[in-house]
Structures are given as C-alpha cells and as structure tokens.
Length: 247
Image (cartoon, rainbow, N blue to C red; front, top):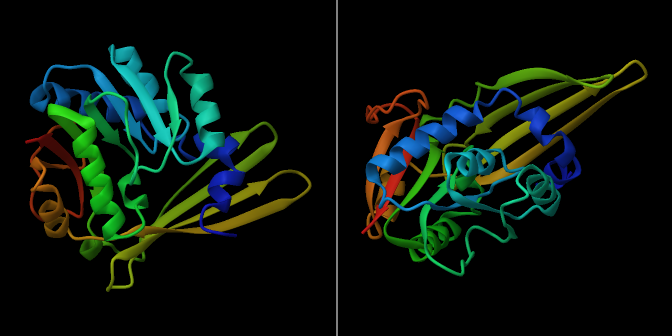
C-alpha cells in the first residue's frame, strides 16, 4: 500500500485505532498551557485534526474551534462530531486562514507529517503568520536521536463482530531528515483474518534542530510529555510537548 492508503481506506476505523488515547486529558493540558502563555483569546485551529476529537473538547471548553486535515473522509467524520465547527481540507505546510488566531494545536505527533525539514520550516512560517500577536502554537514531538527502533505499542478493540489489533512503532535509520511511523492492523472475525501494513514517512529532527527552527518566530517552552502534569522538559527524554508564543 502507498504511504497514506491505509490511513485513507480505514478512516472509519481511525477512532477505534485511537481508542486508548485520552483526548480529554490532552486537550485540557494544552488549554492550561494556553491559559498560562496565551493572549487570552479563544480562536483555535487544530492542524491534522483527523476525526475531530480534540476540536470537540476545545469547543466544549468555549473556544471558537476549527480543524484542518488533508484527508476528506476524516474531515467528514469530524464535521459529524462537531457540526458547529468549520473543517478545512488543506496541507499544514501551506495553509492559510481568513483571520489570525489565538491558538494553533497539532496533536498525536502529527507535526512530523511534514515531508522533510523544508516542509516543516514552511509549516512553522505559516503558523506564525496565522497567529495573532502573543498567539500560541502547541504540539508534541519525538526526537530522532532518542528513537528505539525495537519499541512498539499495541492494543486490541472490538467493533461489532470484528476484533482489531493495532500496532505502531517509530523507526529511524540513524541518518537523514526522515523517519517512519510503522503501522499494522489485524482484523479478525469468525470467517477470516485480514492484515494491513503501512509505513508513513515523517520528518525527523533532534530537539536542538527543532528549537533552532522555531526561535526566529517564537519564544519556545519545552515540557515533559505528560498530559496530567505541566513539568519542564528534563533535557533527556525523547518526547516533549512544545509551547511556542509568537514574538
């Protein structure tokens, strides 16, 4: 399958694949960071919003929230989940907005979907131009030099008569500006088992590289990848939540 084929073909299973994600905790944490570092506004855009669960929580928090993604089937599900929100079919490396915003988010490591450092630079520049003065950009990342290719996460979930097993892992070759998100899905029922494998190319960078890209535009704050606590990054861990304030 092509890089996005599985993601596209199984859009209807995406929420099942992410059933163990605590969207409420993630959204609440970023809301707290926005309260601490933000400009007091409530206009919000979620990049790579998928089926819109984070948008749903931000609307419930009182934000004027909208979502952006490159996958129309995902946006169709998001519009059903959040009928009061606008959803935009755009690439996050080249998106534009009608009016500047107070908060832009990008959850689930989706900032890595930018296809290389140049695309990431373009995304950062577009985020900067889309924010109001004092606007905030929050996202989570993994450092390429901290990836353990042997590690993976796996979970199972049932839907109707089908049992799904989902497995995902990071892979970095040790050089270059690209890493991979490897996915596999196994669907089993009484009559058959189907298995899909997919590999998503994603931009790779160290945290020092990322900070260097962000600092011309933003005041950068790094936090531990813990959505239940706001703790400064310990300079060692390979996952982080990044909060950027427009200069």
